[in-house]
Length: 166
Image (cartoon, rainbow, N blue to C red; front, top):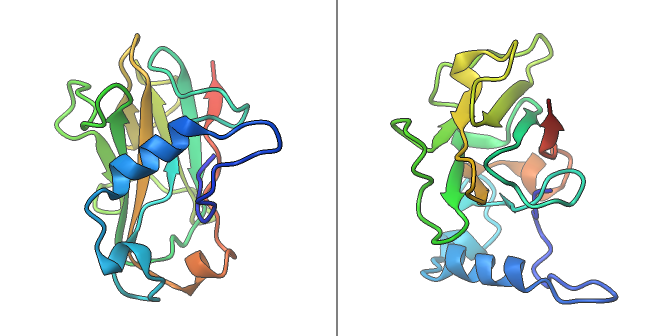
């Protein structure tokens, strides 16, 4: 579940310290472009630590993430994977732990895009839309939007949730 605007990380029964620590890690060198809502300027970094069922993202599991189109980023967007143990880019044996609009992605007829995150390429998934996960390692993502447009800020565009696949 991508956390777009909630920065309190509270529920009725607990304080989500993992998300709070993650937000500190993500924003420790905050710039005005990261914290101000400026349509068409700067960048935004919604993040996900958990899948649709509320489970943490783990390297042995395969996931699909639907990205509806058009993505509200005037410049470009990417989904970048990070190692949960140290917040570094996930060392997964591929050249980059990210995937996005600058890649040659296979798009769906409706303009959406399905991205796959799994230890091995899932059956039927296009290789261009896949990033390798590492069994035994937890991970999280930042969805990077560069020059976010109005649809991000008004909430009319929302990415899908990570869904487990077999």
